[in-house]
Length: 363
Image: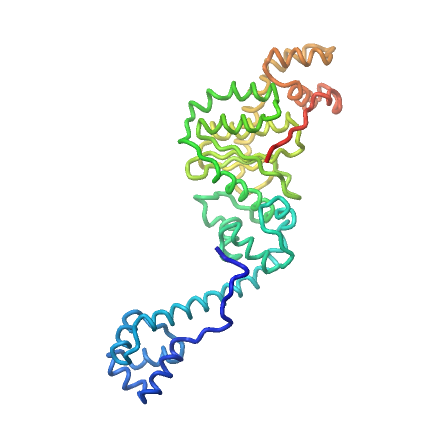
């Protein structure tokens, strides 16, 4: 993990310079030293010029000729190599400054995703740590150029908010690592759906904790990740290490929208297997419109089936008492009925809004 405030020397002597000094003290030339060690003169010359490294084999030979321990040469080479690597990393930080400016860093820091700082170079290092990458090229290969398809399998190429979307998805991965889940059991997960629907219908204050705990018993991880500016994501589903992850933003903080999104993601898990990644309300390479429509239909049918919807719509004089009665009859929440009727333009937008319940999370 890259760190910010540790001390590192401003310069480190190349072991070739140390070797040159040792040879001069002994009045040995490069040619004679090469003969004594049995190494080609061009090899010794390259080390003296700082063009080549001292290998363990060389270190042992140098010890025999110069009486300077092999570990001294190896430590000198190791120190120089680390110094050179840190120089290169500092160059990578310089190259990443404009990249870092594209992230909603202040918002991410305010939510505890990243350490707070106003220094742009520190922001670069913290972002590298957050994504577990060492350069902007590595980040782009993973999230933009789709080089690591097994793990990510989508490309955010050409998406104007790629940095924010990638940050949101990454946070879901980090949250999921804190949850322990057994092996995914598809049959057990299906059997949980009626119980989950009861949570939706009752909408208790601890609904999310109940939902998360219930899903974990079947090997499904569910996390809530607040939206970042300009992301507009409702939710996402993907498999990480053979474990399905449902990541929900709670956007709009309205219960009917939350539950539709959740059951939509459930549809992807049960219908579309491990290879498909869903990101709701975001256009991305790899999105399958047929799969999305199937997940919509799956969610709609669980929340309120077509038959149930038709029965409600047959009542031309719907009252608030009717909505409550139908919700109880069909084991759903009144807000879900209102949301459906508004979406289908059976009733006007705004009508029945008193049934929408704001949702709150304890994270």
